[in-house]
Amino acid sequence: MLRRDTYLPFGQPDFGDLEIQAVSQVLRTGWVGMGAETLAFERELAAACGAGAVVAVNSCTSALFLSLLVLGIKPGDEVVVPSLTWISTANVARHLGATVVFADVSPETLCMTPASVRAVLGPRTRAVIVVHYGGYAVDVAAIRRAVPAHIAVVEDAAHAWGARDATGRPVGGSGNLTCFSFYANKNLSTGEGGAIALADGPEADRLRSLRQHGLPQDAWKRFTDPRRLEALPVTELGYKMNYTDLQASLGRVQLRRQPEFADRRLAIARTYVEALASLRWPIAMQDGILAPGHARHLFVIQLPVAGLGQSRHDVLKAMRDRNVGASLHYPPIHLMPLYAGSRPGALPNTDRLAQRILTLPISATMTPDDARFVSDALADVLASGGRRQAAGE
Ligand SMILES: Cc1ncc(COP(=O)(O)O)c(C=O)c1O
Image (cartoon, rainbow, N blue to C red):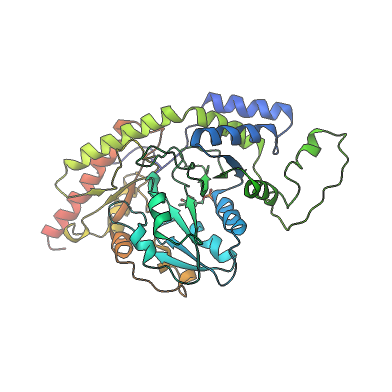
C-alpha cells in the first residue's frame, strides 16, 4: 500500500527565519500586548486589500461576532448563512440571540448565490453572511443587489485573504464588514487571530473599542506612556478580543511573503488538476480553482460516490491510513444537533455535497511531488474500492 513516512496535514503554516526574527525582536522590547506593531499590521492589511480600515482581533469568530453586534443584530432577527461552512459563521448569530437561516450553495462554486439567498429571505432577515468558501471570491455586489437595502451583507473571508473577485477587486475592499482569519492553517497565519476590514469611520472606532472592554480606542497607549494619568471613561459593555504585537510581528512578515505562498499554492493546485484529470473517475473541482483571483486556501474535490464501491467516509479513512491528511470541509451545520431547531430549508445541493466532498492537502510548505503522491494515493484508494466492487463485497 502506498503510504507516506510522515503525516501530511491538509494545511499548515510556513514559518521561517524571518518570522522567528520578527517575533524575537518584539520579545526583546518587552512589549508583547497590543501596540505599535498591531497598528502597523492593520495599516498594511488595509492597504493590501483596499479597505478604509482594518481592526485586528483575536479570531475570525470574534470578528464575525463584533460585526453582527455593531450592525445591531438582536433576538428575533434572522441571519442568513450557508450550512457548508465552519460552525463559527452560524454560532455568532446565535450568541446574539438571532435565528440562523441556512441558504443553499452552488455545486460548482460551493458558495451561496444571489438566488439561494433570495429564496430564504423573510420579513425578519437582518443580515446575510457570505462565505468565500475555500478562497473563491463570491460576487458580493450581486448578493448586495439581490437583497433589500435594510439587510446587511457581512463577508466571512476566513479562507480568502488574497482573493480577488472577477473585476480584480481584493476581498476586503467592498466596504462590507469583511472578516479574516489568521488561524494556524490559514494562508496568512499568526497562530490565532482575525481582523475586520471595513470603511473607516465611527463603526471602525466602535469596533476598536469593543475589542477591548469598551475602553476608548487608544486605551493601550496608557501602558506605553507612564505619564498618562487620565481616567478611562467606559460607556459600553465590551469584550476582551484584542490582538497582540507578538502576533502582528509574525503577520507583517507573512503579509510580505504572500506572493511566494500564492505561487506555491498555485503550483500545488495545477499539479492536482492535471493528475486528477488523468484518473478514470470523473472528479469535480471547485469552479475557478486555477483562476487568478482564487486564494486556494482549500483544495476540495467531489467524488462520484455512486460509482466508487465505497463511501466518501471510506475514502477519507483510507487516505488517512496512507498518512495523507485528507479532510472534510464541512459537515453541514444544519444537520448538527445544536441546529436541529433551526428553520428547515431546502438545501438539496448542500445535502448532496455532504456525501461527496473531500479536501486534499494544500499549503505553501508542500511541493508538487507531495501533491503527486496525494493524487497517486487517491488513485490507489479508488482502485481498491473498484476491486472490492468487482469482487461483490
Ligand atoms: C469559514 C470560516 N469562518 C470562520 C472561521 C473562524 O476562524 P477563527 O478560527 O479565526 O475564529 C473559520 C475557521 O477556520 C472558517 O473556516
